[in-house]
Image 1 (cartoon, rainbow, N blue to C red):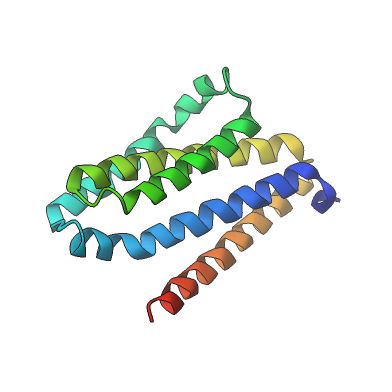
Image 2 (cartoon, helix red, strand yellow; image 1 turned 135 degrees about the vertical axis):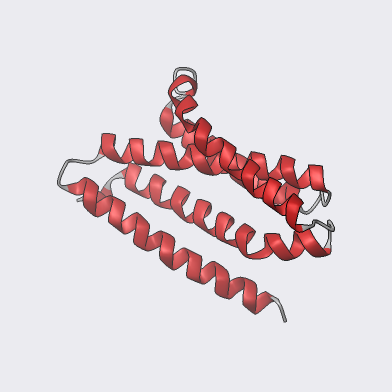
Length: 155
């Protein structure tokens, strides 16, 4: 059974961490950027464009896994994602937000790439669609919970 698999539990934890972090960041980022950093619409567009650069560079994972095993790269990617999110509050400037967004996005995009690769490697052809769909369901539930948690903390 897939739920007894250690890799399933590992990927489950990484999925929860990635989605909770990303959803919380997305929920809070725009207001933070405008109110604390004084970002205008043009600057916000640049920041959001920079956020997509690591997505284009995700193919570089092929070179990175020559030096770091995939499961470790997944963990490092989540740490990078968390570091980018955590640093956001400490660098409330235009260039600070570009920098932290780039770090956060590299973590997210590399995690997503490694997550799918590990799922395909560690599970059978019959299990893989179930595992991927479970992780999508977990992601949706975590997004809702993170959104509710942010709204609950507003008071």
